[in-house]
Image 1: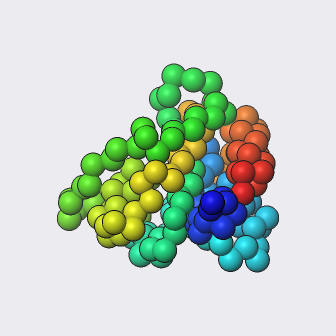
Image 2: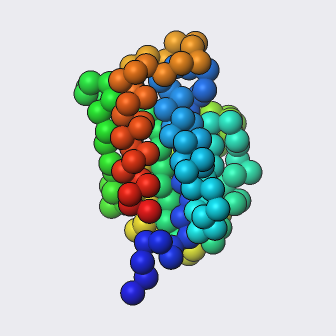
Length: 160
């Protein structure tokens, strides 16, 4: 039986680091990178500042963990959502005008699925979303959203 630790995992964080709480995915993956140094079975990607080329690095991974902020969720800031693989059915978007720097997690999954074909880990994908409302130009996270990010970091580290 394959253990989670033996599975090659890609962790992707999305967000804009200069848009206040929208940077939560970037914050979480930067902290995870610090804690996971030396783990050859885990790759951590900052999708907020990288672009399309990161998707090519996903080949060979059997599990994806995706982290992003979600605005207009109807829940208080800092609320954590976990979407299991069964609920993730993004449509492949063949839009040549897609702004790659602004790619969101559902678009990234669509392109990864297209690029990876049968190697796409459809049943081993987890998406963690943190409710946010503040996206003004500001390089600081709100305390509430940062605390939610810290809880998520602990959750993911315990899972791995």
